[in-house]
Image (cartoon, rainbow, N blue to C red; front, side, top):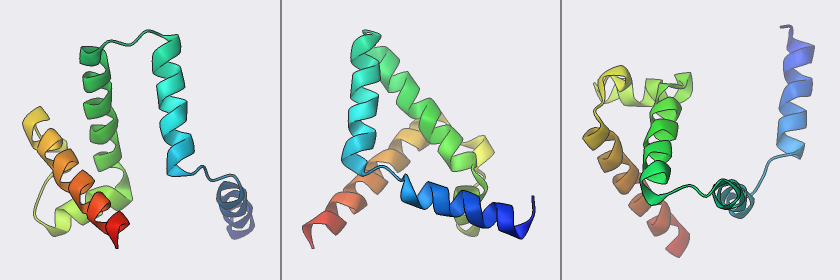
Length: 94
């Protein structure tokens, strides 16, 4: 992919970026339509987070902390979710 293509893709993504509320609503709508149970939702969230942690920009952040994202257990992933959720909420209160 050349620079111009990357620029157009970035512009498109920036213009069509969803707010956190819109993303949350999309998840809730999908879960409601598919009657996802609590257990299924929990499994989906851990799986989504694991995939997020493996994305290059997130993996690099973890590797700086000497954490291998490929070796994280379910417990470690859920602990990270809790830590980052609390940090996000702290940032909202400012």
